[in-house]
Amino acid sequence: MNIYQMLAYESLRTFVGPWLELGFRIHSEGAENVPDDGGALLVCNHRSILDPLALMNEVERYIHFVAGARGFIVPTIKTLYHMTGMVRLSLKKGQRSSRGLDQAVQLMRDGEIVGIFPEGIESFMRPDRASRISYFRTGFARMALEAGVPIIPAAVIPLEETKLSRIPGKIVGEYADQPDTGRGSLRFLLYRKVLVRIGKPIDLGGYMDEPLTKNSIDMLSGKLRRVVIKLYNGEDLDRFLTGKLPFDAYTDRV
Image 1 (cartoon, rainbow, N blue to C red):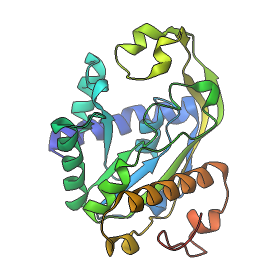
Image 2 (image 1 turned 135 degrees about the horizontal axis):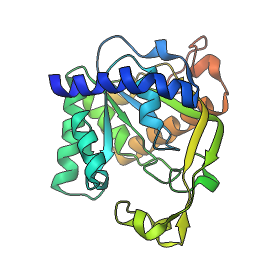
Image 3 (image 1 turned 120 degrees about the horizontal axis):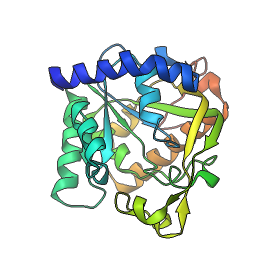
Image 4 (image 1 turned 180 degrees about the vertical axis):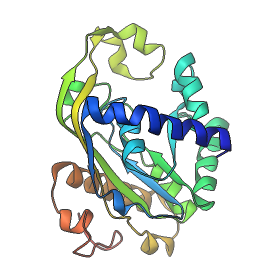
């Protein structure tokens, strides 16, 4: 994070935030669950292009969002990503992917919050199925374990929404690596009223004492996906939102 990125980020919050609240009636539950300091990984579902803006508006701390490499191809979006300190992550294995992961891990070790949408663009690209939370890619769990930080689960929940006009899939396909772009036209969602629900930070201490294996990463990823689904559906909030009941990510079922 540098001073220019912080200024751009705060400018968005200051000048765009009020319009978002007015136009999309954004409000939140559990914003106080985000710690005032220390590194953490904020994990959220992904239904709309507005999701990062909704989180930025409701969370006081600076969030370094992770964005797919293809988003950096679009000129305007690329500029916005760079201005606000987005972390570029390639979904294809290799040097670029490793650099993005390493950067995100180092940011968390340095006491920053990193925000990630483990669904990628799966739900985002399928508005007809967007009431469901798609499969989570597991890389986020490895990032949190390597950084040694808690995970903050969050859910962006549309209370009212509308669909935008159709866009030819081929146009979107130039910037998004997703099979649905080759199937005629696509329609994306726009929120009209939205709730951001942020859960209690989840300590990963139990996993820290174990070797970092595919099994442990898959297990943790699956549990976190179910926690986000619970927040989305408003279930078990005494465990995952208010913390009135204890939850141990290592031993407890979700």
